[in-house]
Length: 113
Image 1 (cartoon, helix red, strand yellow):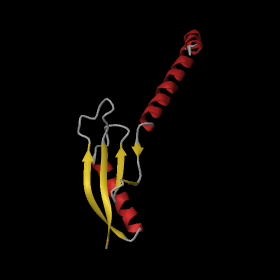
Image 2 (cartoon, rainbow, N blue to C red):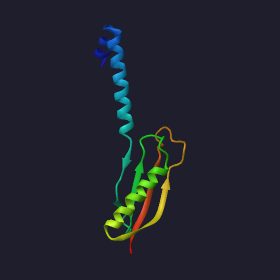
Image 3 (cartoon, rainbow, N blue to C red):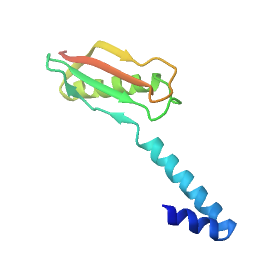
Image 4 (cartoon, rainbow, N blue to C red):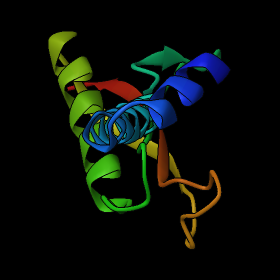
């Protein structure tokens, strides 16, 4: 890393600028893509299931995450020929800074139709 910095300062300014912008965008893309998580459908051990979704940043808000989780749960139950029943929902509260990103978690059961 030190050699890279010394080489950047000893060469032309345009090369340094290009490297600086490349590193900035590479680190930004990595930071934004590495934080989002989705659990998928997980049995909770009580005859029900849990789905958790977390955004990579605070910008999308909580609404889309909860809607996506409920849609996924509905599709999971429908594939089993059952009906989706929401039993509990949890959401993180703003402000969405310093690692407190929007997160929605739902608990549900698949009831007979």
